[in-house]
Image (tube, rainbow, N blue to C red; front, top):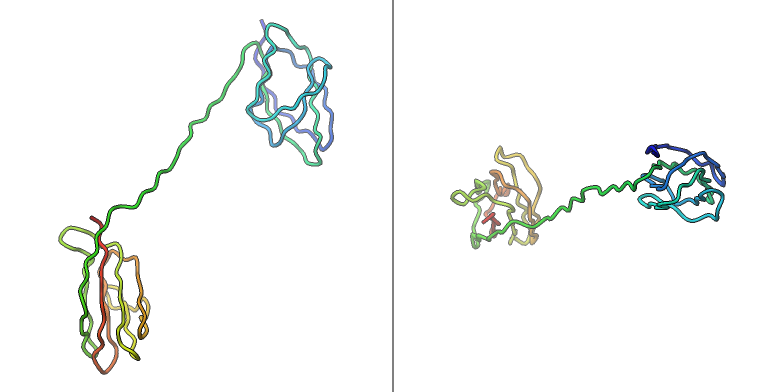
Length: 188
């Protein structure tokens, strides 16, 4: 009976490493790069991680590992009487965007020093984004969080889209009214 054995070796650059290893099957479980292998002093063949050499019913008594590269290679392999296969599970992440719908507010006049408040909800639907367009030719507006802390300015003639599901405000810090368009995108 031929036992199944496992070994890990490190091949220095350009190293040739003869080893006593017997079996009918050689399975390379891990290798940091491709290397060469010879069974019982025969010709060298390429070998890499995941490859198996099945020599059944013949038995090899020795192997020679050869590194043809200028970098160190670490190799973990199994020898024995039966083939060893490893099939790791493959996980694919499938990302899709959740369906959404838009809700516009039309042109609104924001009075001097006033704010418009938005809850982030349309009934039970949660907002994904808020879009603020400043229609004034000179005055700025501010998008604020629910506690009136400034998140960012919306300068004259500019439009800003913010990913924000919580409460927020659109503030006019000016001494005169400013026209704006505010739209919201909600998850359906």
